[in-house]
Length: 570
Image (cartoon, rainbow, N blue to C red; front, side):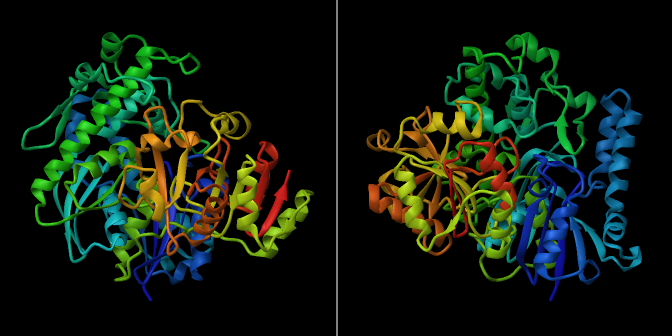
């Protein structure tokens, strides 16, 4: 058996994955264990989990893979630094420090696991964007495909186009620093007062409340190149001069503001993070969303030209979390088949680099997202006993929870293995009745404590999806936001966003039998084949352990909590 440990380390969304004989047997983000959102640094607890799940020790691994190759394009980066940035010696030193950190991975693991350094497995560095596309392609089930990765930056590159045939990946085009669709979206996100790492999704939600009236003016920043890809106007950004600095004090990642004085001159002062949202703010969000979609579609059309002999697209990178833009790609029909993994963000590079080094199984893993920890009945009951809460074990948990939902109760749903990636897919979810017009307000004020403009997703039975949504494709990982049919919007108001769309997850009996049984029980009572599904957390990482779930239950106003077959009613 070939066994490879994959890592995303020294970066936000630190994660680990274990691949055995070409199959992903475990993967998890470090944030789920140490409770630091988007945790940066080294994923030691995630490594411990993966090794335990795989039943192997560190010295038994065949290789350790990391989803970055800092030396990649380093000459080009140093030349760019020397040509345009002040304090160039500091910038070059930072690059050399990054190279040294990755070379120290074996030493870190040897120290933490008590293994002599010379007995640790070999280290393989896999380029960042190759790791992204590998995380999608090698589990997609497609023998050949066009591959695409779009994010901020990784190894001096922001956009990577490739083709794959018979397991071999060949790059065909890329976009290098300082040009980046991801940085463009992040810059406007920061300008709108969302300063925390990962806040781009808030702008996507806010965009539905505005009009893209600044599309042309903002479009002056992004030049789409005929017969090529794209370029940014550097005068609107700080990163072409000063670089993109990610810091992680106490392992909390942050990126310095990258909008320049030019951005302020054209669009006025940036929004303060505590200020109300003005018409300008909403319209600017709508405009950058429209501009991002324009840029993505230009890149996808160019990829179609460069790789004309395939029906399939595998897409990853942080920008692939933009479910509105993903729907544009689907609706374009440029590719017949599209696969986006459950963790297209940087956490997913842990899977991609491990598969790149360890080989791939012929078995399709397309619906595999439940790669995190599960807990035995004994472990769950021990946590319940320690909580002091009253509980009981149910032999009809799906029917009981369906009844609670019809009564307007909000239920924490913790069953089986935890999901890998940022979406709650039925392992660590909060569930509610989508028919209640007041449910969004209830969730925002009692449980989630978040901005009121942010929408909630739905999990829907695959066989009845077409009755509610204008989409005929599967969405197992909630990667698409699509139109809710107008005649159905009043029936499920809690999951309909301001623009009439909904981010949805398809539920079938083969890949998600547990959720299928629950929603079927709810449907039997209501004739509505879907439930509201949001992540089981409250401004912290999604819960991982029974203790995490109990803490969230106690600190919020959830009405009930399910821990496998155990039920707690408030």
